[in-house]
Amino acid sequence: MTSGSTGVTANVPASPIVRVPFLDLIAQYESIRGDIDRAIAEVVRTQRFVLGSEETRFEKVFAAHAGIPHAAGCSCGTSALFIALTALGIPRGAEVIVPTLTYPATAEAVVLAGAVPVLVDVEADTGLIDIEAVEAAITPRTWGILPVHLYGQMVDMQAIAALAARHGLKVLEDAAQAHIAESRGLRPGALADAATFSFFPGKNLGAYGDAGAIVTRDATLASWMRQYRNHGRLDKYRHDFVGFNFRLDGLQAAVLEAKLPHLERWTDGRRRVASLYRAGLDGSGVTCLVERPYSKHVYHLFVVRHPQRDRLKKALAERGIDCGLHYPIPLHLQPAFADGQAKTGRFPRAESLCQELLSLPIFPEMTQEQIEYVISEVRARA
Image 1: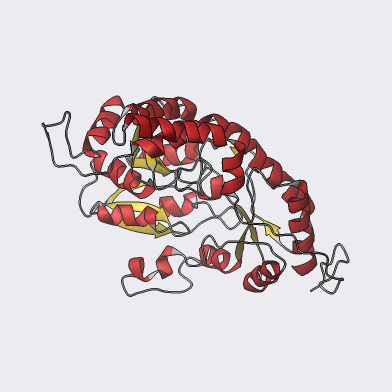
Image 2: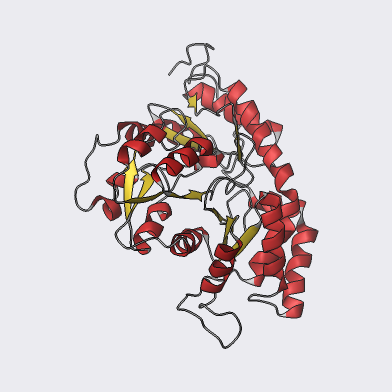
């Protein structure tokens, strides 16, 4: 269709196809190959594969980087959520308020901890949890709030913290997509009981397998979480309580520590791509999600809306551009969380977003040619 403000149409002569991957982890590896190879070789040389010095060192440097006093490494982002909920003493059957637009792991952890996720709608322009909807969902059974910093932008944590304080609720942040993001100058964990991170390979700070971490200002809580993730033991033979094996292995900790010094630069690179997208896609027929003025968005994903999302995704794929969907089905319409009562129309803003959202390629190593090609192709085919 015609992009009305530019006069560009889908019938223009086809330019040469430029292959643009959704994410290029090979390019990232090549840029720091020496650091990564040395880190892995040292773990293999010393055989410190589980709970060695690499993990302890990474916990310290990650906590410092996050601006939070304590960190506990663990096996993945989902186990981080589960451990944190358990450490905070969530009662069985308690209610936790969760946005319906998120990856299922957010609600899965609540269910696995023996509690009930209470789903609420999101903001139409950001996809972040709607704070008025959170307040409306609070009942005498509500134990906590689990805001999700979706796509790399933080929820307004001052508002969430104030709301939680008024009602005596716990707050656990799902920051799986928001490494070093900021809201009003504060990073995840600053205003909550704890915040959790995923280091899945595609994340802004990604391992070479599954890995995760929890940050908290509470030293006692951090100590308990480290003990819980290691079968409840303090030393090799003493188990103080029943825990589980949610440990962060040495190879992943070494990779993450090698990558961490580059995270600020990579984040600047993502923000540069996002800025060029925003300028280049203005008036194109797609709508960019909003970055709040008080927020430092780290753009784990760059998400746009289009009323014919599936058609546009297919057209871009034919032109060599790999896009993603995050996420096409809200939790209240997922069989796992609907209890057989999935009802379309329950959360209209989330449902509308899920039908229109498209994630464009974004990674720090994107070339100017790739960025301009994506913009040009979106403008021509939106």
